[in-house]
Length: 429
Image (cartoon, rainbow, N blue to C red; front, side, top):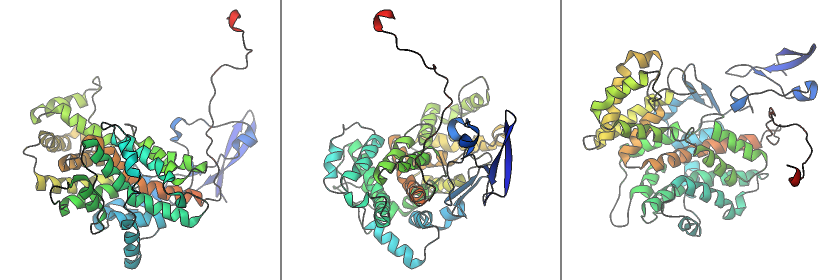
C-alpha cells in the first residue's frame, strides 16, 4: 500500500494517485490507473522520469556518485571481489559462500564451449563483418541450438539458459574477434579463470604458447565487473521489453546486444579512443583543451563526465588503478595514443574549468585505454561491453519473469498526425 497520495486535477476533476516510497531514491507516483480513471496519458520522451518496473538488483544515485549491486558499493566489489562472484550476487541476491562460489564457477566453466555446428554460422559472415554484427546473429541463433533451455515457464530451463549465456558469451566474443582478424578459432580452457580464458581465446595462436599475464587478467576482470549491470538503461530496458512478450532468453539478450551497439550507449570508450587519435600527439593537447572550453566549438572531450553521474563516476577510481597497472606493465613509449591519454588526464584533472563542471575521467576513458594497451581494436570494445553486461541483462530478465505484475510492454504516444480522412482515388489526386 502507498504511504501517501498526489492529487491531479483535470478540468475540475480530482484524481488521487498513490505515491510509493523506495528503499533508496526518489518517491514514485503510481499512474497505472490514470488512463482508466481520467482518460489521459503521461508524456515522457525517453522515459527519463518514468519507472517502468520495481527492482532489487542495482541502485544508482548520480548526484552522490553511487552505484550499488544488491546494496554493495561497486568500488568494494571491484576492489575485493571478482566477476563471477559479482555474477552470483546479481543472479541470486546474496554473496556466495565458498562452496556456492566453487559450484557456480564450475558450472560456468563447464559450459564455455559452443555447439560445434555454430562454427558454420560464424563462417557465413563476411570477413570484414563488425564483431557486434556477428554477436547479435550468433547469440540470437543460440535458440536454434539449445532447445532444452528456451521454455521460460520452466525455472530449471531459465537457470540453464542463464549459465549458458554467461559461460558462452566470452567464447562467442573471442570467436567474433578471431574471425574478424582472420585467425583460427581458439577453444576455451577449463584450467583458466574467466578473464584469463577470454584473453587466451583472443590472443593465443596454434603456433606458440600463450600465458595470460595476471595483471592483464585482473584488469580484464575489473572491466567485466564494472560493466556488469547499470540499472534500467536502454539495453536493459530493451531486454525487459523483449522478455515481456514471452520471447526466449537468447532472443532477449540478442536484442540487448543490438541496442548496446548504438554509439550513444555502448560506444563511449570507442569514441574516446577515436578522440585520442584525433588529438594525435601530446603537443596538441592544449589546443583541444581550449576547444572543449569554447562554447562556440562543438568539440567535447569524450570519456569525461557522465550523463547519470553528476559528481564523479564511482567506477572510474578502480578502473584508473587498473589502467595505471597495465600501462606500467606494457609501457606507453611506443604508443602515441596512450601517451596522449596519460597527458590529457593530467591536464584535465589540473584544470579548474573541468573540476568546477565535474568533468572527471569516467570508466569509459580508462577502459578504452586498457583495451587499447592490451591490443584490442576499437571494434572489439562494444562486444566486450556486451560480454560484461550479459549477467546484468540475465538478472533483470529473471527478475522480470518472476514478477506477478508482469505484462507485455506497451508504451503510449502523443499522436500529432492527420485525423480521420477518406481515401481519394488515384485519378482524383
